[in-house]
Image (tube, rainbow, N blue to C red; front, side, top):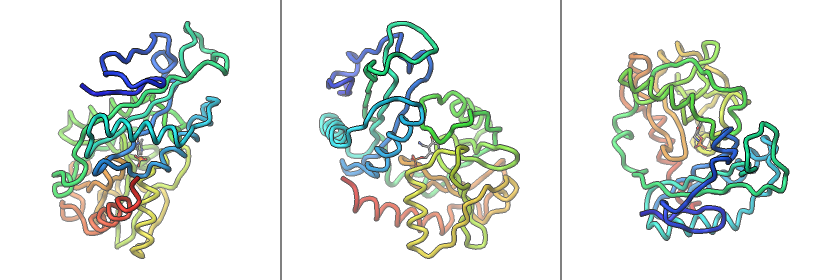
Length: 284
Ligand code: PMP
């Protein structure tokens, strides 16, 4: 049984209880982060902490994130659960006001803070060689996708729609342009140029995206940050997606159309290799 963290305590998972009045449960009033673990070390930790603080600020949750304290909790959970490869999920909600009310509770209401581990093979999965299939689905999420809230019902529905169609994931579409995947950022490659949507409220500002674009720069690859259409994606030479736990994942089919050769492409492969090398060096 896993040991999880709840509001200052390390407890067995079946003893971690949260109130039915918790704002996270009633209003999806909370934010989260997922940090990847490889060789028992944390990848991109500081980026996740920075984004966590930003998400809290954007929701007007008055809380100053303590990096050192959270680093200790992350490391403690890795150690107690003996995690070699996997993820640490962290969630903070606006807490438990003791009743249901749309108005925020007083600012001194303690947040609910939950962290738990998930074991998952990160390096050397079959996705690296086989790639993923995606289908396009209208993006019906709210307008602040830059905030990493736990309001994930639409991405979950879109993921299930993709699975029902025999695909692995959905690429979400707004006005004919791809925003991102259900839980990853989306990229195409055309004539050697990497194209990915520019940062705005339309997409999550991926920690992996930032690192992968820095890797592209190191490799002197050309990058264009702009929205791309689904038709451009069909005609791309290759496509891939990035996320903390997937690194870069090749996309080999979009809406039944083979992307390029229908196999993982060289640009994505090179970026993945450099991303892993750079981030393993910097892992803590
Ligand atoms: N977009 C969405 C909607 C996501 O949920 C995620 C995963 N958290 C990402 C992009 C990728 O972000 P990151 O690289 O920080 O995991």
